[in-house]
Length: 306
Image (tube, rainbow, N blue to C red):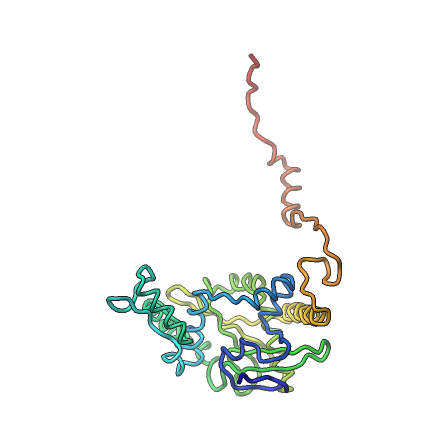
């Protein structure tokens, strides 16, 4: 029988048990809060009830395992096989069947080249003089649950890594680029500032201790798998916390009214037609080009009318 969470605290459970949501009637995670803050409740509840598996999830799972819980890597990751040995790609039917069989066992299926990639990424992490220290002397993937005091909903989080001293939290991200400027854009696009605020608030709610900082260890998914360490500033963390508060309020409203509205100016407002237009920076560029004449077409010779 699946475990049902009725008391706040830190629990030992598998990733599958955590993501299945052991709270009644529902709990809000960091990813859920990001979805509610950036989209509408109708999309949130549909995605929750219709989970789609993506190949990038398998690589992400394997990457986190080999860095954070290497002792579990071999038992939770399988190498995709084809008729003639390890598969190089999924063009063969036997490779697809192997992939599906591995996934059916609850493991992450990876091609041999992907296995080599995540091993090389781990080696680069451990060769970095600072990042190598971030994942030592602590615990990975602890499941934390608490009830929000303002809205009364269950919340949950599962930080990548909590050092034993608890002074900061660490999250491992793989990205197309580990350049801090590129990650800064990705942070806002994907709501990682919300994630950081959610983890800090959750850890404090469960333990009574608030970490001083939140660190992202960012690693590129292309050779030589460069690593950067990114710490979020205070104002951006506050932006994330405010978005999280909004998301919790939206979920509480939806549960109270048993409604999951689509796009509206405010959740409790009636549906309406939206007026859409160019963002401010585009308008400024338009005005500048109109003023300097750069939008004027070039002169052409007028053709004679027969």
